[in-house]
Image (cartoon, rainbow, N blue to C red; front, side):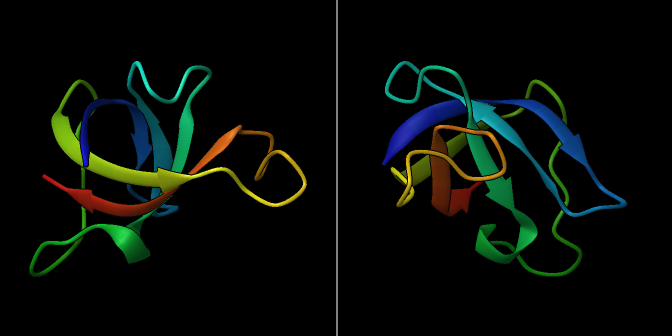
Amino acid sequence: MVLATVRFWLNDEGWGVLDSPETPGGCWASFAFVEMAGYKKLSNGQTVELEWEVPAGGNYEGWPYFATRVTP
């Protein structure tokens, strides 16, 4: 896992983008991969741990990386 910062998080839509040196350009993340109890909500600027992969086809929803695990 690497450290990442939440660039933005859309609570009403349940997704956002995380930034880390290992994921230049941004890493798309869904609430489904956030490991926490209750309502899965992140805050802009929050530091998280991130596991990611490069999506097949080169991007996901226009982002070059896809989060597979996010831990606040």
